[in-house]
Every structure is written in structure tokens, then in C-alpha cells.
Image (tube, rainbow, N blue to C red):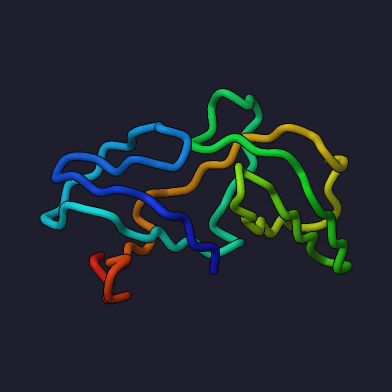
Length: 113
């Protein structure tokens, strides 16, 4: 699972790039967003993703390829089916379905949602 530091408000969550995603819940404060590699999607337009980063590592595994994307100091792993036509250092956008993310309290590790 990928873990991303975020900040939660009652109406949105703030990602590490400053982008705000609409999201309603009760907890307010620092949190950790968890998302599985197979749930992350490479976006066609860099500006269309929730996060923007660069391809740091490409691991072809046969039926799948694992792409490690560097976003600031964070490394996120994306699993894509088959081969990838991306190259090292390519700039990519990442998105995901908000219903497939997991949120944890960053102070005690307990699940928020």
C-alpha cells in the first residue's frame, strides 16, 4: 500500500502538492492516505491528475509492470497491466477513485475511513 501524508478538514483533504479534494468526514487534522498500487491510475494529461510526479523506476513483471513515481520526497508505486510505454523521468499525473482510498490518523495509526 502507498501512504501519502495529507491534512483533513470537514469538507476536503489537502494533498502534499496543495491540491484540495472534496471529501466529507468528521476528523480534522493530519492524516495518512493509503492507496493500493492497482488502484492508482496514470492520467493522460499531467494537469488532470490529483498528484504530479516523475517516473523513478520501471519494473516489468511479465503480465504487470510496477512504476515507481517520485512526488517530492514521496515514492508511490503504480501497478499497470502489461507493458508500459513510459520512460524514466517522464512526468505523469496520478489519480484514483476516492471511494478506494483509506485514511488513517497520523498520530495513532487508527483508521478514519
